[in-house]
Each structure stands twice: as C-alpha cells, then as structure tokens.
Figure 1 (tube, rainbow, N blue to C red):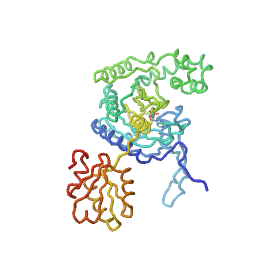
Figure 2: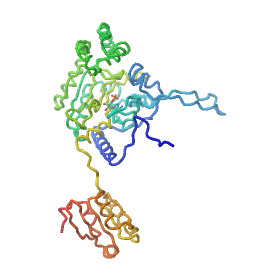
Figure 3: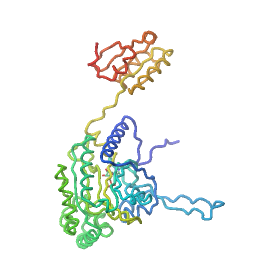
Figure 4: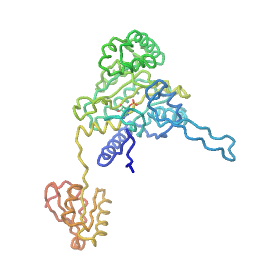
Length: 444
Ligand code: AMP
C-alpha cells in the first residue's frame, strides 16, 4: 500500500522550526497589544458569497483559487419545518472579508468606537506551489475599522498602521525591507481609471502575454502586476492611476506621506501598486524584502500587503465602515528570518541523566522541580550507559546533571557545562539558579 503524504502545497511544521513560528507570534502579539489591538478569531470556512462580493468575482482569488464545496444538505428532521438547504462554502482565502462580516454581524459599529482587531491563522488558495507560496499558508493581519464619526477615514490611521508595521518588522529582526505605497483612489476614481486603462489597453493588449490579454478585458488593473519582461515597455506607457485621482484622494495620500516623513518611516511611491483585491480604495501598500540574496524570498518577496477598504462593509450588506488593514505572510517571515540567521536550535538548560533505572523516579522529581522554576529540561533514562547519556545531552542541552544514588542521598549534584567543559558540584537548592545563569559566571 502506498504511504500517504501531506497534500500538494501543504506541509507539516516541525520543531525546531515551530520555535521560530512561536517567537514570531509572541512578538507580534506584544506589539499589537502596545498599539491597542485585540484578537479576533473568525471561522476557517465562510459562505462563498462573502468572498464573491467582498473580494470580487473577477479577482484571481475568487475566479480560480478558492477551495469551494457544497456539503450534502441535512435530511429533513422531525420538528423542523424547513429542511436545511445546501449552501456553498469556501475555505477562507484571506481574512479581511471575514473580519468585516463579524464587525457587521456583531454590530461593532454601534459602539461608535474604532475597532482595532488582529488575527493569526491559516488561509487557503489554490495557487501553483513554490518556495514561499503554499496552498495552506498563514497570515498575521490587522484591521482598523469603524464609523466615519470615529475617525476611521483619517489618513492618520493609515500612517499609524504603517508605522506599526515598520516597528513590528524591526522587532522581529527583519531589517532589509522597502515600503511601496500608492493610492488607488476613491470609489469613484477607481472605475474612472479602469475605463481609461481599458481604453489604453485596447490597441496594445494583443501584443502582450496571454494573462494580460485576459486581464485587459476582465480586470485591467491587474495588468499593472504583470512580471513578464516583454510587457514592461508597454506597461510603462499606460496612464497612471494618480492622474485619475480626485483632490480628496491626493490630499489623503499627501497626509499619509507627511505623517510617515515625520516619524522617519521611509517609503517609495509605486504608481503600479494596485493590488489584486477589488475592495481597496485610496491607500495601498506592500512591504517587500530587499537585498536578501541567495537565501531570500526570490520572486515571492512580498512580506505583507494591505490597504484601505472604505466600501467593503457596504459591499457585503453592512453600514458605512471605512477601514484599513494588512496581511503578512507568516511563512515568508519564517523564510526571511531563517535566511538571515541560519537555524540555531534552542537548547535545554540541562539534561538530567539518572544512573540506573532505580533512579528514574528521583530524576523525574528533580526535572519537575527545575521545570517548576521555569527551566527547559530534558530527562534521560536510567537504562542508558553514561556515554550514551552524554551523547544525547550534548545534542539537546547546554549542560548535563548526573544523578546517582550518592547525589540523591547527599543533595550535591554534579553539573557539566558543554561549552566551557567545566564540571561543578552544586547543592540541589541552588541548582535552578546555577543552570539559569551563564556557565562562566558560576564556576568555582
Ligand atoms: P494578499 O492577501 O494576497 O495581499 O497577501 C498578503 C501576504 O500574504 C503576501 O504578501 C504574502 O506574504 C502572503 N501570501 C499570500 N499568498 C500566499 C501563499 N500562497 N503562500 C504564502 N504566503 C502567501
């Protein structure tokens, strides 16, 4: 029988890599807290209509990348007048639409306050798998949304989110990034530009790549994302969205830039950054990794993307609730950090080696004491010969604690630190403190 494997485009995350995932999540939670964001957890699957109406029917995500299924309807049950009808469901390809649905469903707008929500979780897209691009991937994202009376339209909200992201990447240890910033205009600017673009594409589309020929008709904005080298000279001649923006959108963009300049967050105005999702209005942005060379993210260099979505709530049947948010690829953060630092396995503070199986229970008691003091401890087995214990300990821990009958009786334990090679006798009551401090400062 053939061995079963993880489905193409999905993967298992194993230790020690998961240590890095946890470290990233701990760091981002700390930052979100500092900026007064609260966590939201929305369902992994939603009504397909949410994405069709929210993200947009003509986007790549909705038109070809969603995992959509219709479960068999429940059979009619006694006492229920209406049998449950079969409903089309979709594994969420992104989380903003789900957050906005929850905002509407729980009437969060009625608080009159801005809602600042963050999420961490898996998303699903049927894309071609490659390094940094998976079919199940993880996003860390946040949204600031609320009624206009709460200041949700203010450019200060955009600048605050961008400044938070610069801080966040810094605290994660990602130093080489570039912030690309653009405006796709208001709900009226954008359709006007799309018309202009469509007209400009008409005479040239035939000489572009197959994708662009299709997009020129279905979703002309996406032509600007094209990476085909032969299309670039044509794209360079297309009208810029900036020239279709009304004064309000231009002022909004200028105010975001002024606030970023004031706090020293560098950015680049990228006229082609329109992003793939229909719901964006005004500010769009991306943080890309730069200068990572060989170990970097390569063509999948976008660490995160986001923007303003002033009409999304209304598009899915809610009240007016302008907002801005972003989604960061956690898989890509991990790749970027691994490329930067190489992999350093986390070692336990000590490996306890019981000398003989009769000592096993006493060794468990000692491990319990030390773990209770907050130390990371590996526990060996009394059936191991000393040589085998040393070999195991050397791979897993910074030090080995040998526990024989004499040690149990006397309460004086022998500790050997691998880095210094030093062997020290330590009273049991001081062992926790001894193992917690660096080896050189505790030698006797
Ligand atoms: P998007 O929702 O397309 O704006 O993507 C936001 C971020 O999620 C991107 O910048 C990537 O870092 C990450 N991302 C998107 N799609 C994938 C994928 N298929 N695999 C891994 N990360 C992804």
